[in-house]
Image 1: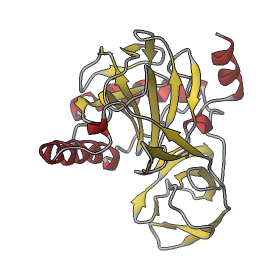
Image 2: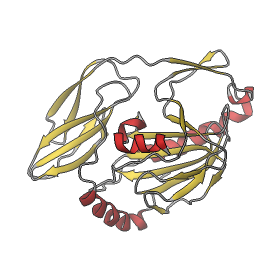
Image 3: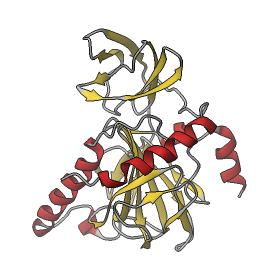
Length: 282
């Protein structure tokens, strides 16, 4: 199922094009580790196309005949030499270095959210497929908005990549950033995009997924209110929801994740030091 609404694509292209002229220098921070981002310079007189692990990757133009591949590196990536492959089968390598993420132990009061009942499994699979369809979608947006800001005022309570242990049971690493805030705190869009899907998911609670183009997707979970609809064009700073404690949580907070080429990466890499400092001061 494709949740991206193509009739609105032209307006999104126009908005992103205008933003590109203003935010040309806004790029994610390069971090060549599992869960990080690789920035790879390409030289070509025409727009190149590249793939990492057989998935298309984001390409933006830096200047005439100079392009930049922005590649998400999975948390499961092995250290060593990795490569992207261009459409002409040329291969360009980059090295992924090791990074050790800390372990976090959490106690979830609702045991069902840790060990779902048999009757929950069909719902979980269905919701997983819905989100997977959004993450796999790749709209050929020429100039995605990469000038991200922090979506909510609060305290970072859990960072990306933590090895999670829930009620004494090891679980998948933390795939986003948790920002603790009072229930009802406004959540605002960090960049231009299109609402790709919304839903009340078993683990994530009330959730919004925004497609920013070229495989860049942001997700907002555990909301108390969802204030946008699928297909809606979103502007930076627009109110999209409110902080809540729905789904699998220990308290009210926003779980914010970013996916690039269907790979969850550290959201902190998309926030400039200026925006990050400003968020902590607010």
